[in-house]
Length: 127
Image (cartoon, rainbow, N blue to C red; front, side):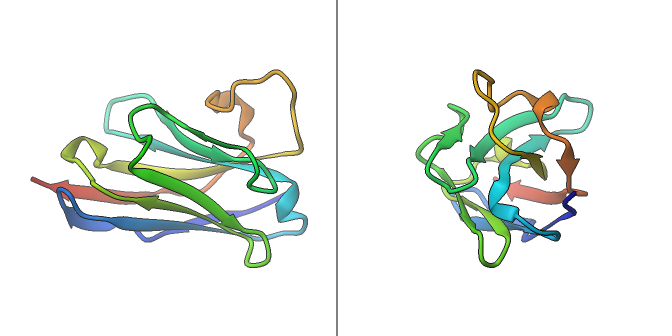
Protein backbone atom coordinates (compact mmCIF):
# COMPACT_ATOMS: atom_id res chain seq x y z
CA UNK A 1 0.00 0.00 0.00
CA UNK A 2 1.13 3.56 -0.58
CA UNK A 3 0.15 6.93 0.81
CA UNK A 4 0.43 9.99 -1.42
CA UNK A 5 0.85 13.62 -0.43
CA UNK A 6 0.85 16.40 -3.00
CA UNK A 7 2.43 19.81 -2.60
CA UNK A 8 3.49 22.77 -4.70
CA UNK A 9 0.16 24.22 -5.69
CA UNK A 10 -0.48 27.93 -5.54
CA UNK A 11 -1.27 31.08 -7.45
CA UNK A 12 0.58 31.85 -10.66
CA UNK A 13 0.07 34.28 -13.51
CA UNK A 14 -0.91 33.04 -16.93
CA UNK A 15 2.22 32.07 -18.84
CA UNK A 16 4.03 31.20 -15.65
CA UNK A 17 5.31 27.93 -14.28
CA UNK A 18 4.70 25.76 -11.26
CA UNK A 19 6.04 22.41 -10.10
CA UNK A 20 3.88 19.97 -8.21
CA UNK A 21 5.33 17.20 -6.11
CA UNK A 22 3.79 13.99 -4.86
CA UNK A 23 5.62 12.22 -2.08
CA UNK A 24 4.87 8.55 -1.51
CA UNK A 25 5.30 6.44 1.55
CA UNK A 26 5.72 2.71 1.63
CA UNK A 27 8.10 0.40 -0.10
CA UNK A 28 8.66 -0.47 -3.74
CA UNK A 29 7.69 2.94 -5.09
CA UNK A 30 9.29 2.01 -8.39
CA UNK A 31 6.68 -0.72 -8.81
CA UNK A 32 3.87 1.83 -8.91
CA UNK A 33 2.53 3.41 -12.03
CA UNK A 34 1.98 7.08 -11.19
CA UNK A 35 -0.47 9.56 -12.62
CA UNK A 36 -1.61 13.13 -12.28
CA UNK A 37 -5.25 14.11 -12.63
CA UNK A 38 -7.09 17.37 -12.21
CA UNK A 39 -10.60 18.36 -11.36
CA UNK A 40 -12.54 21.59 -11.56
CA UNK A 41 -15.55 22.19 -9.30
CA UNK A 42 -18.60 20.42 -10.64
CA UNK A 43 -16.64 18.55 -13.30
CA UNK A 44 -15.26 15.06 -13.60
CA UNK A 45 -11.68 14.33 -12.68
CA UNK A 46 -9.58 14.19 -15.82
CA UNK A 47 -6.25 12.69 -16.78
CA UNK A 48 -3.20 14.92 -17.12
CA UNK A 49 -0.09 12.74 -17.27
CA UNK A 50 1.30 9.38 -16.18
CA UNK A 51 4.59 7.60 -15.77
CA UNK A 52 5.53 3.96 -15.66
CA UNK A 53 7.51 2.69 -12.71
CA UNK A 54 10.88 3.28 -14.30
CA UNK A 55 9.84 6.48 -16.00
CA UNK A 56 10.55 4.88 -19.33
CA UNK A 57 6.97 5.24 -20.54
CA UNK A 58 5.33 8.63 -20.28
CA UNK A 59 1.83 9.67 -21.25
CA UNK A 60 0.13 13.06 -21.56
CA UNK A 61 -3.27 14.37 -22.30
CA UNK A 62 -3.24 16.36 -25.53
CA UNK A 63 -4.23 19.52 -23.67
CA UNK A 64 -0.92 19.61 -21.78
CA UNK A 65 1.55 18.14 -24.29
CA UNK A 66 4.53 20.39 -24.76
CA UNK A 67 3.70 22.40 -21.62
CA UNK A 68 3.71 19.86 -18.78
CA UNK A 69 6.39 17.34 -17.89
CA UNK A 70 5.97 14.39 -15.55
CA UNK A 71 9.04 12.90 -13.93
CA UNK A 72 9.86 10.74 -10.95
CA UNK A 73 12.68 10.13 -8.53
CA UNK A 74 12.37 6.58 -7.26
CA UNK A 75 15.02 7.11 -4.60
CA UNK A 76 13.11 10.05 -3.14
CA UNK A 77 9.80 8.24 -3.81
CA UNK A 78 8.45 11.36 -5.44
CA UNK A 79 6.73 12.13 -8.71
CA UNK A 80 6.70 15.63 -10.14
CA UNK A 81 4.58 17.60 -12.55
CA UNK A 82 6.40 20.55 -14.05
CA UNK A 83 3.82 22.91 -15.52
CA UNK A 84 4.82 25.71 -17.89
CA UNK A 85 2.97 28.20 -20.06
CA UNK A 86 0.05 27.92 -17.69
CA UNK A 87 -3.36 29.01 -18.88
CA UNK A 88 -6.40 30.04 -16.84
CA UNK A 89 -8.08 26.82 -17.93
CA UNK A 90 -5.32 24.84 -16.17
CA UNK A 91 -6.59 26.09 -12.83
CA UNK A 92 -7.89 23.05 -10.97
CA UNK A 93 -7.29 20.82 -8.01
CA UNK A 94 -4.49 18.46 -9.00
CA UNK A 95 -4.35 14.93 -7.69
CA UNK A 96 -1.60 12.37 -7.64
CA UNK A 97 -2.61 8.74 -8.11
CA UNK A 98 -0.99 5.33 -8.24
CA UNK A 99 -1.57 1.70 -9.06
CA UNK A 100 0.69 -1.24 -8.42
CA UNK A 101 2.44 -3.17 -11.13
CA UNK A 102 2.06 -3.29 -14.88
CA UNK A 103 -1.23 -3.92 -16.61
CA UNK A 104 -1.20 -4.75 -20.29
CA UNK A 105 -3.72 -3.38 -22.72
CA UNK A 106 -5.06 -0.60 -20.50
CA UNK A 107 -5.58 3.07 -21.06
CA UNK A 108 -3.34 4.91 -18.62
CA UNK A 109 -5.86 7.75 -18.59
CA UNK A 110 -8.54 5.48 -17.12
CA UNK A 111 -9.24 6.81 -13.66
CA UNK A 112 -10.58 3.43 -12.55
CA UNK A 113 -7.08 1.92 -12.82
CA UNK A 114 -5.74 3.95 -9.95
CA UNK A 115 -6.13 2.53 -6.47
CA UNK A 116 -4.40 5.20 -4.41
CA UNK A 117 -4.99 8.93 -4.36
CA UNK A 118 -3.58 11.97 -2.67
CA UNK A 119 -5.66 14.71 -1.12
CA UNK A 120 -5.01 17.17 -3.93
CA UNK A 121 -3.32 20.53 -4.29
CA UNK A 122 -4.94 23.63 -5.73
CA UNK A 123 -3.53 25.46 -8.72
CA UNK A 124 -4.87 28.92 -9.50
CA UNK A 125 -3.91 30.76 -12.68
CA UNK A 126 -4.63 34.47 -12.94
CA UNK A 127 -5.17 36.04 -16.34
